[in-house]
Length: 400
Ligand SMILES: [Zn+2]
Image (cartoon, rainbow, N blue to C red):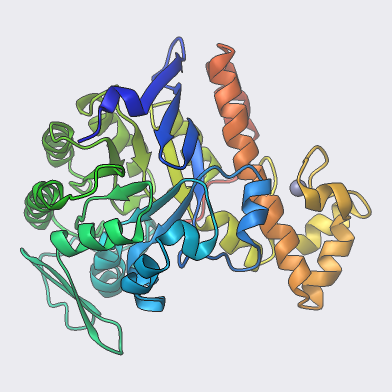
């Protein structure tokens, strides 16, 4: 284990909340927290270049171990000198463990739910058949069938792959349950996740990477607290808070787990990127976020404004020859009008989705900059209330 105090330094704390700023040192540079990681699943973005993300202010990207392996092969990435060289991004990188695919190809598929579930009129279910799914789970790990071949992933393999890929932050292998799972199944999955966490620590051979352990426990207070206590006592350099959250469960979950995790180590709320959720999570002490949302929304021609995502067509009617968002400093808003971008989108010109991906990413990075500044300047609570009051709509029930 690395010297925890040396890699993460809390630089400022909000006066009346758990929000804090910090500096996380990695082999490829420092990350200023709270921070947001754009998701480059296979080491690339749909619609924009990695250099575009850097220009938007991205300090670290999240990539997906399962998809990297499926697309290129872990060995090919290792032989190229690791992921930084392979994708030509010489700044911090994170990889997930592949554990989320256990969920999305397994229970998520059976239960028809994504990362954020809501409006589901289904009763909690006991353990049922996984016959419909592409992943099967047992105590030793998971077997994926991706239509081409069977892929076995165990905690040891997840660590070995992530060490070969060579990201700066890696995650312990875990099982993410569905919001429709009952308490008994969640308890079983949680114990499995704890066992896998111990096996991941034991399997480490590289000590220049930061490994984050993941807290699970579903929507059950006792399980979440137990998971945070047990994972929090392990020698991880940071912690991920995982799960597929019901619409109001995220804040509740954070209130359960954050007090049981070591204050001085960084916390990452996995897969959450809705502005309102980020604000509420930072208020509870979360330091890091990742989400596909800003770039995926760009592909659907949705523009992130300070208040909500809006379709480019009505937005361009309102903004005309002006920029997408009046005070945005992104290159799209500096150089192009909302109408220009709408016309590109209408013509299915790739420049349209690129302009929107850049804008949406910059809006997220600027949100994080404003959050850090508000905490540092001791006006976090005022900033939080002001931002929340401007958000017009609730997040959609399912964001993926
Ligand atoms: Zn912009």
